[in-house]
Image (cartoon, rainbow, N blue to C red):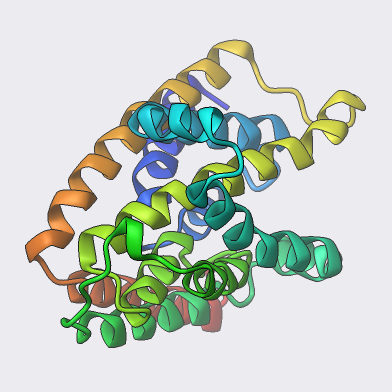
Length: 259
């Protein structure tokens, strides 16, 4: 894998992790384009580490507050919101792994993501702020996050949509979605560490890994800042249309045997 390919994959990961269009689905397509279907666990881990760094920088004040009050409401909201994804990952790990490797369903998953985004965009009467989020809200949003373990179901898209359905205002829905990504991404990285340390992961040059990580971190930071501003006044439907076009394109390529 060249540094240019690593840079492009880092850009893809950084932007699509926090835009509601599925980072895993886009990375699958990007790897296929470059012939890097077996690019490696090291690359996956470093790409997610890059986006984790971005969200940690954005939410540094919140994280300091959580460390000062580890049993405060925000901490409990994150724990409750993370439980469904942890349970799904543990119980259905082999199933999700097989789905991710084949990529046979990603076209349909892009289409489903678009439907969720289109429906959620019609919800305009949400008024809840961060201090009004209930533990029930966090659990429901967490259930949507657990479904996003499927490769082309957007984690940010589904959790933002769930937040809107739970009457959070649009900015708060995105804000909580990105905050909830911290334990999700960190947990995913930690889950991969034993395999990395076992020596079974594919080797990738240190230079390529650094380029991919830095690109993912910078683009992830930009995506979070932009998305929080975008959702204040703009529509999610543009993302719905995008993933519909992408999903149909993937299905056509699969049907014709080109993908």
